[in-house]
Structure formats: structure tokens, C-alpha cells
Length: 83
Image (cartoon, rainbow, N blue to C red; front, side):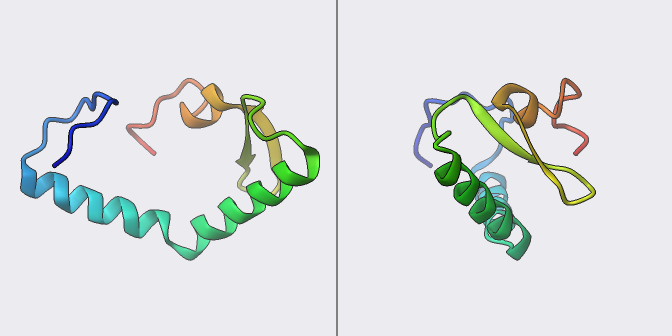
């Protein structure tokens, strides 16, 4: 496994790391994730907001709102362990 500039908190065996990589890729390529990614890209291109430090957050109601990258990827201060 190649080393990453991002230091992971998990210390996984090569077998476990490979299994995790496979699961992560399957999730990233799921139809729901592909739709959300495409929608975000359309919104960013239309608004010219690429690279402004903001992300799109998909709410449970299906609406999309603009939030900071820190909040969106950090689960609004609750962390990502229990997602």
C-alpha cells in the first residue's frame, strides 16, 4: 500500500486496508453518491463558487444548502465516527 500524505488514525493490516478501500470505492460509486456529486458540480459551475471553501449539504428533506467545508465534512461538530 502506498503511503499517504494524510495520516490516518486507523492502523489497519494490509488485508483490512484493502477491504476498507474496496468498501469505500463501492460507496463512492453508489447511485446516490453519484447523483449528489453531479448535483454539487452543476450548482458550483452555475454559481461560479468552485474553490470558495464552501460545500453543498444535502438535507434529509432533499434540499441542498451551502455550508462550510469544515462543518459539512465534520458532521457539524459531531464528528464522523457515528455516521
